[in-house]
Length: 449
Image 1: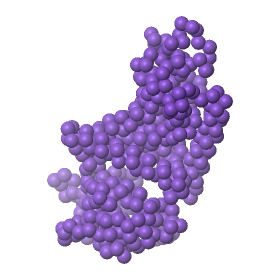
Image 2 (image 1 turned 30 degrees about the vertical axis):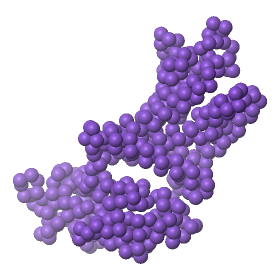
Image 3 (image 1 turned 90 degrees about the horizontal axis):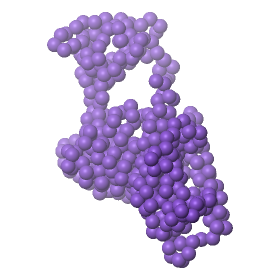
Image 4 (image 1 turned 180 degrees about the vertical axis):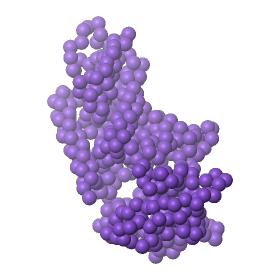
């Protein structure tokens, strides 16, 4: 499957799961409140599948999988027979209408907890947050190669991903933070990272480069983790083979293997290499002729066509009992991070380029799916929290806009006029179209080299 098709596939899977849970939250609470549900749709446009259940609800999948809706009996949308008016949404008490509308975002938050629970039980492989030789601000602040980041600004960082996430908010806010580390000698230390010294004109990507944190990947043996189809190695080596020597020169790890290939002379004629290979209990002497390729600087480089095994040396995992409180805490942290980023974008502290549309979401969905089930579950949880919070924004046509209208009705004791509601709908459509257009524009910009 090509990368484009895979990205589209995983986007449809992700949105299908998240939208179904969101709309089911509305549906379930509406049924509990005695509202007649007419249609439950995942996707928009022409139906590619539909059926009507015994309660008269039409269940359908739309052609365009970029949303969904639950249609309920409502006098504001169509005429309602006298006998069914008690089951109309608009006839229900304002408290029940608030519960029905809020159920969608709440379903996404509960789904995030469940997804993170499964992620913790399966175990999410990652890297130990050990620093390579720091540069920039980190080097000036006294960070050293081999420092293992234990906590950032009081937030535990068991993995490299957690360390990056914890750094983001204070980096945007340009405030100094304390970082707990364990140095290469095993000493527990605290170092101060003066993020207030970052140039305020830098965006998030440029600011991160200026911080100078880089992951020190763990050393990995020169073991064949993957063979590229049609490569020179595919006809000679097998997955799991360990290369221990090239032309009688010992090879300690994959980095040494790459260095040995880089030291080969250039030219058009590929050199024949004698490889010492351990395959199980056997020691083999094999001959392999590498393929010629052009490096970034235009010089000749030689490729065997092999990839190393998985280098990730940390596993974020909990037992079935410990996973539940961990999932609740992680969901709360995701919600806080997402809400904080939304607020920073609104106030201008963070760039609006952080807003992503369907193209970026599809790419990330494909990337995380390729990393394994736990990573895809983590992505789904992040996206589910984002959908919940975005829907709670007080924009008419979104759940948050409806909640704002019902809260005003609750306070003043009467509903808003139809004229105000119609104006709000038009305003909401304009705002929503603007946000979607900006997100898509950002997606296109990311595709430009």
